[in-house]
Image 1: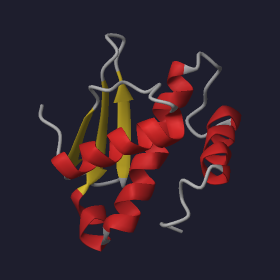
Image 2: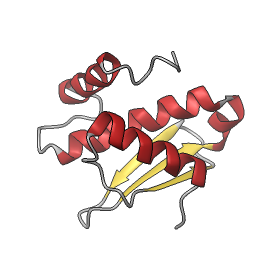
Image 3: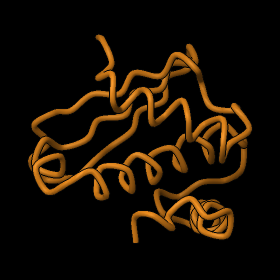
Image 4: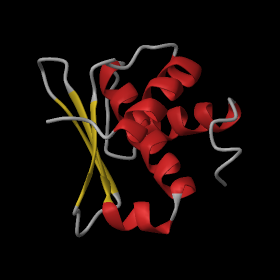
Amino acid sequence: MKSDRGLKAFYTWANRRYFKSRLPPDAVLVYNTLRRRTAMSHYFDCGLAVIEVSKAIRAIGWKHVAMEVLHEMAHVSVILSDTPRGVHGKNFQREMKRLAAAGAFEKYW
């Protein structure tokens, strides 16, 4: 599976800026026809991360795409931290607050 160039460029920049390059550099980021979700992430034991963003979100605009990618990157970050995790549990909320405090969403909110 090959990454969308724009999504991958944003992921690479955000990984360096907000995650100190801790997330997998070879992550795959694609637009997909997700019906019930705006985006989703998968992390496999082999170390591969895949982030899918709905084509419907792309149609709304880049701000929404960027927020969804950051949201999914937060999920991957929590998975890699070896902390107990619920889908949007305490550790995920802590990670989202950390991103917000670092200014990750300033251009997008």
